[in-house]
Length: 221
Image (cartoon, rainbow, N blue to C red; front, side, top):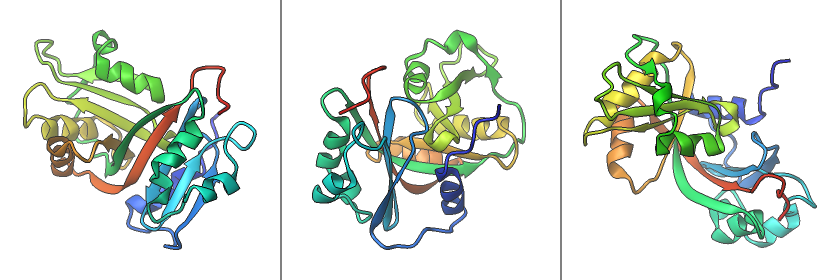
């Protein structure tokens, strides 16, 4: 049976096309897109929190009391800690970027030998259906992961062997995926080299995202 699209897929697709939600400073609770992974997604003047309802997650009133809002408050560290509870792990705050796949040419190939690469293993911890990709030449240290990440949308991760190679690798991932497909990437804002590489490959900033992970079977704060 096909998986139902996550409610944020339409929102993210619209934002990627330049159509932002109303800038009212509000926030909305939405379902998780992956078991054990909560998320805070912020865009211009609006925020979305993917987490379970009480008692498995903090109440709206508790989050409001901590200053959660769409004007930056959703990323207040106190909000992340409230979502994490006693067992959760707060991930880093990332810039969320989006691009459209070109489907131009299959430059990358499936590389199952790269499945144990730290970049791929890290992706598999928070995304579904993660696959590892690289170039035909196994002497190359470039690696990419493709999976279902934020809101169940296609999300990639890359690691280029040489400085300056990220743009080519990111563009080659976009060329590998079906033309017109929306593709996401999350990158630390402080990693300027990676941000510039993604920009050169056609990605553009659409918001910010922070993941909070819980051990299996221990979702409640």
